[in-house]
Amino acid sequence: MSATTIIYLIIQIAAGAIGGNIFAKITQFTLGPIGNTIVGAVGGAIGGFIFQGLGPELSGIAIGPALLQAAIGAVSGAILTVFASLFMHPIDY
Image 1 (cartoon, rainbow, N blue to C red):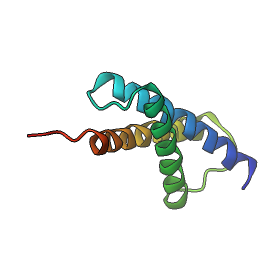
Image 2 (image 1 turned 90 degrees about the vertical axis):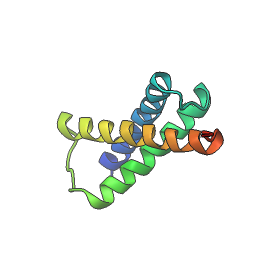
Image 3 (image 1 turned 90 degrees about the horizontal axis):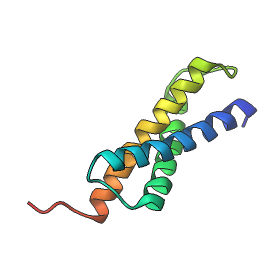
Image 4 (image 1 turned 135 degrees about the horizontal axis):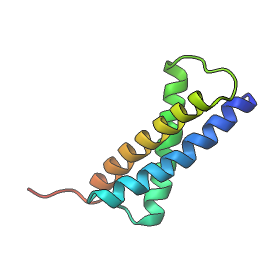
């Protein structure tokens, strides 16, 4: 792993944790603050690895690619938080 990849992974994990917490605050899908943080961070890492495997090769550390990595981490962290919350607390209709 290169230094750039490690920095992007850290950005994705942090953004995933933030995205999971923010999305849980504005919706009913919550696992508690610690659960949202952990699941969001895992979601950010998974989303980042998927994007790096499928997406273009981003070379160097610049603001544009770093913001893209943060956005991907936040969105994938929020998505995994919703799925984990639905798994832990199913909605009864």
